[in-house]
Length: 83
Image 1 (tube, rainbow, N blue to C red):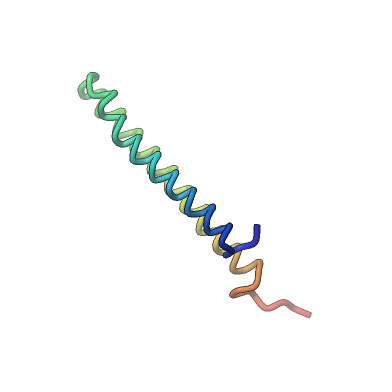
Image 2: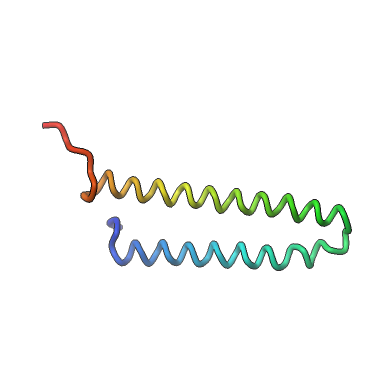
């Protein structure tokens, strides 16, 4: 799929919506499920939140490098090619 087309933008938006929904559902369900464990449950929820945000950060880095790859590799702000 070519970069910066409507299909590409559609796929990026779908992935962002799915990622946001997974984060929201996880942050909603985890405290309810682990609340019966007391202090241990809150520690587990905090650790899982850190892991969740690490996954979001990795997805963001992949997205940024995808954008950079599109800009450098296909038209746009491409580096000049040597003859």
